[in-house]
Length: 200
Length: 200
DNA sequence: AATTAATATTACACTGAGTGTAATTTTACA
DNA sequence: TGTAAAATTACACTCAGTGTAATATTAATT
Image (cartoon, rainbow over all chains, first blue to last red; front, side, top):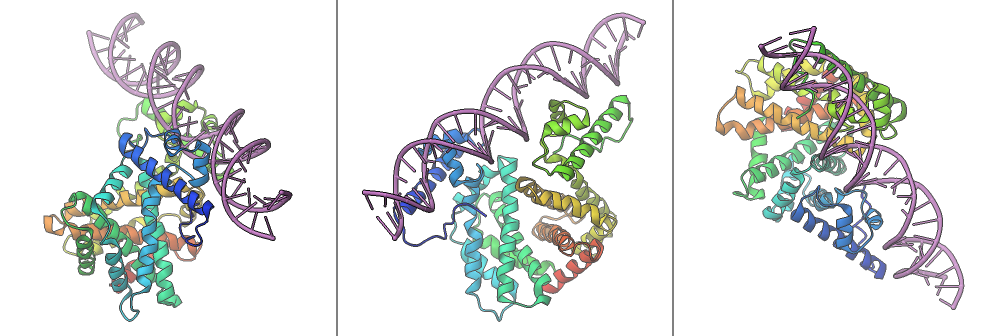
């Protein structure tokens, strides 16, 4: 997947420490410039200069410009999976996911999420990548569900659960932006999952 | 949206006729080359030369290289909406969409769909755009649903119906590719929608 | 038919993302 | 201290996409 396995969380030697610092400098500089001048108007030269590295080195850390934005959102999937594992398995899969999702998404700052969302909306390719990352999360979630509720005959059902769970997150996030943060994400998620059960 | 409104289906003068021919030549050349040498290895110069136009003229017809691929898949949304309008409105929204979707998707050739899908899988940006187009279809469908079942209080529910309908199409298409065409898309769609109702 | 307006096509030059390569520097480790 | 691995850089290159302005073609008008 990505080049930067944040999962490497052991023995932070000098090299690893520097690496993380550089990574942080790049994302910080990138986000700052994106917000300041817009996504397209910010060139990789700008970012590299602001982060104190060469343009070529940027590509040592990221595969593309939009990965800066995506790296913000990419951790969420793993967190949901971790929370899912802690759920009891004598409840329905959709219930377990619902609980995990609400637990994870609740503490996220509405303001920050909305800011990132606004940035992504400005560029078609980035927007597309973001949507694609939802599908990636769906796959991650599906794998975790299969692990928790094994059995070949359940697969189709679990694919569906993953699909509508991630869909519910997306709809809730969209609602958050539409409402401009009137209600919290946790509230919106609870609403959406509730409406989901009602609709079928 | 796109540059090429195929919807302009009146009075085909010389200009309009030529325009459509050129459009066709570009997509034909593009698809042929993509299949022949792969998406990334095919440059816009290749396509332009093969289509008998200048590189600059390509951008008069398309905004980007990937639009060639996307133009193949973009009509489906409108067709589903058209089929939805013909459904009775005394059934549940999800039922109406289910019927419309199966009616539209059934006649599509499995082989062709799988070929396009394979091509898209080869490039991350294209893949992303494709996923994004699903979300676009979702919006189109949602608008149509709102028109058929008005009322501010139904909106959340209809958003969900649109989400899981498009999701069901996507899962069915994925299953088609996974099974390598063992079952038809119509069959898979029926299965998925059925499993959907069972899962909640 | 001649004139004019709109649309289509092209050439040219440019920016910026992303890659290949090879050389140099920095860190890890024996 | 020496050496292997990883990080950083310079340089040159390809290709997608844009701006501009000039030319060619089709449509519309009188």
